Amino acid sequence: MDEGYANLPTSHLLGSVPAVTQDDRKPSPPAAQDAAATSRLQEFPPAPGGNGGGYRPPGGPADGDVENQADWKGYFNVASYAPYFNVDTDVVVDRLISSIYPMDGFYRKIDANPDMYGPLWITTTLVFMLAAFGNYATYLMQNKKDLDIWNFDVGYFSWAASVMYGYAVIVPAVFFFLFQYFGSRQSLVRFWCMWGYSLFVFIPASVLLLIPVEFLRWVIIALAGGASSWFIALNLKECTEGADLMVLMASASVLQFALALFIKVFFFA
Image (cartoon, rainbow, N blue to C red):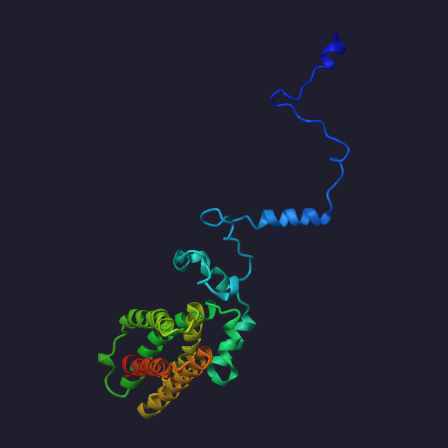
């Protein structure tokens, strides 16, 4: 009776599990296990549409460009810019020094790994310094006259934030699309990085503009604006690789110097 049931075939039954053979018990080679694990890792997170193209190794953007994403919506995805804030302090300090000394090949330094941490820190610091020092400079200039008419102007903060953040974001984006239109393939993130570091020279200049001597103030802002304009011109010339875009480079330099004049006239008049 028991032997009859034991000899019945069970392969056609639902839920039946085939017996494990001796070959199946052999462990797979380590190389095969590593390859399988890597393939599983590269499928997470899945790309839109399930094509597997959304994988990006942690710690750095793909080819240093946000533009390389398969979907244009990556421009408006905050997570797309997260790798650009993962930068060491030594790298930021070296780029700050290169922004003051434009002959140091700044664009080559950011070509492989542009960052957004430095430009954001520079712009935010400049906003607070212009607002605070602008008010204090007004106080120093009126100290010899009549202090009763001096008041702390809170509107300096809104003006500084609107102008500095707007300039650091919009101007590089406009020149990026202009360079694209004239056939020069550039990176928007690198332009943001370069223009952001070009504003660093105005931070020490804003401290020196506290000197209550009008002639020295004009000399200081002229030197700062000239250095910042020269920095933009040299790096644009380097990134265009010999293309005849002198009009765009001159326009960017003039606009940079115009920003310096605006800082002097509006905040340190």
